[in-house]
Amino acid sequence: MNWIRVLGLHYETTRALYPEDKLMIVFDIDGTIIDMRCMILHALKTFDRKNKTKYFHNLKLNDINVDENTVGRLLADLKIPLPVRKSFLKWYAKYKTSPGSILESHKPFKGVMDIIQWFYRRSNVCIGLNTGRPAAIRETTLDLLNNIGQEYNVHFDDELLFMNPYDWNTDCVDIKADGIKMFRDKGFRVFAFIDNEPENLRSVEKVNTNKEILLLHANTIYKSNKDMLPIKAISGSSYDVNDLI
Image 1 (cartoon, one colour):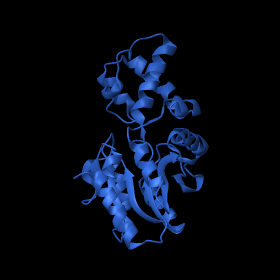
Image 2 (cartoon, helix red, strand yellow):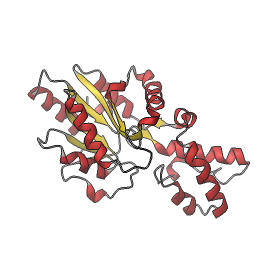
Image 3 (cartoon, rainbow, N blue to C red):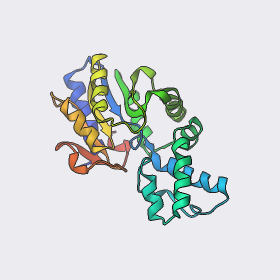
């Protein structure tokens, strides 16, 4: 089942049912819009350069199979010496959340911005963002996304960005459902939610009481168990705007 084609059909159905409503499609950011492997690779290469080492000299993007919070596992798999691992992780903890890192090394998945642009151009449709990133980096996050969006004539609005009110690594599962509730309270009819974490989709399923929200799983890299996916959630990893058209 082609997840993007299903999304297009669901949008058409929802628009036909509610021709005057303000519709919204909601995206997670990290692992859904942003390919966090790019940041991880950039961090590893930067560490090598700063320390005049070559531990990660031959590492490629497809060699990275962990998310941004479990890089230690990758280092162990690569058999990096323990002292080097500790040194890297201590440096990486600050580097990954720095404005410079976010703006320089965060890149979108191929095709995802074309999908966002397609919906952005629809009449009376908005793009919502629902992220586990802490509110402390709100400005940097918007700068990042709007820098990416310039090429596509897409602008992400501050008022349509829901962020984690707590700190990094705080359990944000329930927060995802809170984000959907906030958008509804603002008067939007949310018709689709895309996230890479199965547990986040399960959380939103709890508030999807009228079953109007299509739950889409970005099958990229995730840490929660895929068994947590709601039964009717649809998975996919390729963003092809032609499947919408």
